[in-house]
Length: 223
Image (cartoon, rainbow, N blue to C red; front, side):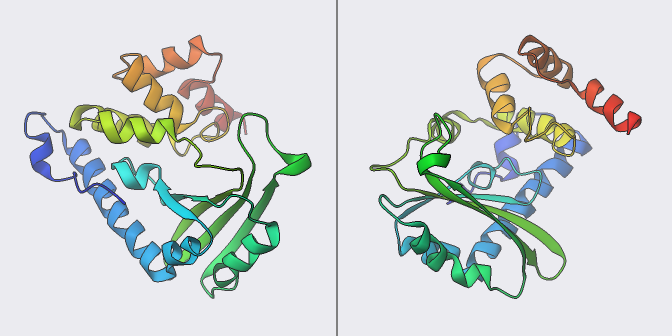
């Protein structure tokens, strides 16, 4: 569950711009809204019937810039039929507008990922805001490690959280985001490579052969 660490006192020693305050306010609002979505859909109770559930990602560590919830279900030996049966209340929910399924096990297992059944669920919250829920049923024995999540929960500070939010806000609507540039790149850059600005992050990306912001804007203008 999310850590309640978004109070303004956490940033008392940091000089916040108006933009920073807006980022933090939006983050807090999204985090609160995400929990209402989970409660409305009764997702945790639903998934807990077939395994151990862990909520991961931005909703749990105060790094939200858009409406996205990540849920991991550790359910060794679960069949695809059982996964679909578990998901049935969501698949038929009147405000679920779209569902995408990926069968990533057996012949379709992705190397270094682990075997899973993956559902992407689009939910119309209050008939206004659309939320995306990424639900993974991990079917191999044991509990799948989540080292990035574990590190974020342990080492994030008010300063690094704000730095990550600034970079994510500049990137999350660009074409390469979640394709060739991921949130994990931003976390790694800030936490392990001293990245503090958008220009720093561009340099980080160049060193790894990934597109920069300027290249994204050029692509948009060409289109």
